[in-house]
Length: 265
Image (cartoon, rainbow, N blue to C red; front, side):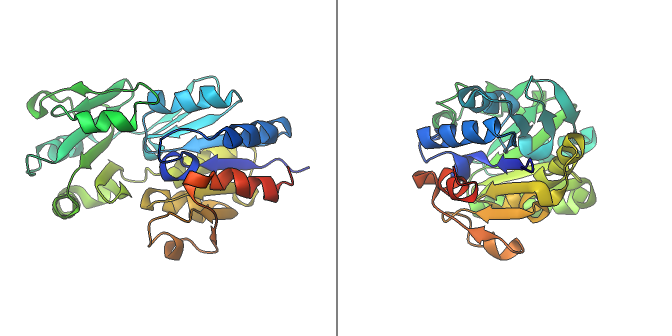
């Protein structure tokens, strides 16, 4: 049997709308690990947020977090970290924006938000991961893995334009949802992190199966030998991933259903 690397996004892909792992998903991933396959989770979430799902799976899992800014091995050791240039991060912190748009910084140690945002806590309620409120003028621009803006899509589009104009070549700009604009250092994305992980495992892209649902999954899905896009995915995603298969809905444990058939579990 050829060992594969099976890598999945979390929200909108592996997790249901309740932001939890379905029991069938846990069962299928444990069976695949028993067969010798490698498992990885790749998400815009913070490492400390993601490791709860790794622990629930209770198998060796590599974690690609913060859209590829960090990669940890199954033992929790940091394999790679990529940060925004401090002057780029400072520019993004200071970009003018409507007061209702929330600014977040993801750094290795935690999550900083410019003002209280109770609605964000519901997304992370299943993991207990929470933010620290830090006013923008006190935010440290060093060691930032990701700048995240949350709010109205029209306001985010304006921020995206301003970011491109300021430091376009030095940034990787994407969306995890229509109301979440995510900015990492140039060359940082899930696909680049996945390339490095495959090399570490002694595998190649054709040995990889990937699952995703949104625009921050494009590079990862285009790299994988087998790319699966969820039924609930962003409308543009399927068109932007060559050779992708459309599979089931995340609320129906679509990844687990597809893997059960693919590996005859």
